Length: 308
Ligand code: ADP
Image (tube, rainbow, N blue to C red; front, side, top):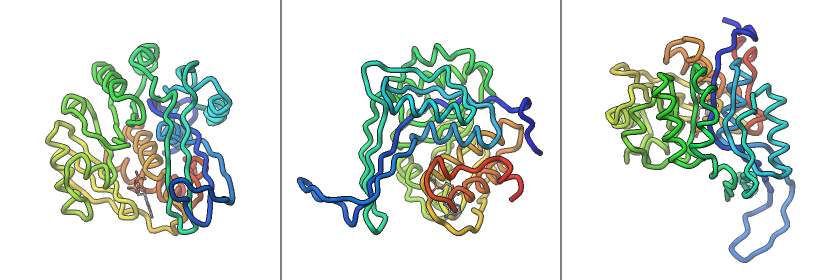
């Protein structure tokens, strides 16, 4: 099914906007040391932004609810979202805090150290969510992560649930979540590490994925999708469980593959496909992304997934 522009489904993404600043060096410095690095790369990032761009490129009419600082990084991020056809009227500006940044160092083996200064992301408030009420009311699917204050996540999920909306949570960065929050979700999409933090089960194979999904599901969410990197995804939909294998591709860079997966899953669900069909679509979209360098730059467009 191809998507005609004016038939695009409405997805509201609520989450973080960051700028990733990466320096590559032979090795990582030890505390107190200054070393000379090599290449410097600056890229837009943040799980919220990555998922919003993924959903937009994959065919949805996306509204992004987020907060940026009153600075150049914020202005640049806003330009990026506009160029992706994302609706930006609920991207708020915080005059007190800077835009979120991630400072990333990578050594010659690909090992990294990352410090995130969340800045304005941490002032996205329930009041901001209230301002976007009409947009949430009109949405087909709401997609949210945990790089913003937890009380804002809880408030937004509560509002969306009250409006009868399908809410999908990518629980990253992972942290314990209340049953009250989990019960209001349509689906939760942890990766292996996030699933382990939520359940205490080390997820490495089908059996452990099944167990972790079962524990999460018992907290009150019917649909659990545990993403398993190059192994695809384990899906628990009510009592039905299935392992959907990833596409076999030449992996170049897996940064942000989980975000592409969540964006794609939301798009297909918003179009009325089943959870299993949506996970298959998400596996295909994320597999294309891992064959390319970068996070946002690697996100595929709909036609690329449709022809695969
Ligand atoms: P995260 O990026 O959140 O850690 P995963 O590593 O589980 O998430 O990856 C998310 C999805 O991306 C997987 O479920 C799969 O569909 C796809 N994916 C990740 N790595 C690969 C790979 N090497 N080959 C093919 N698909 C992959």
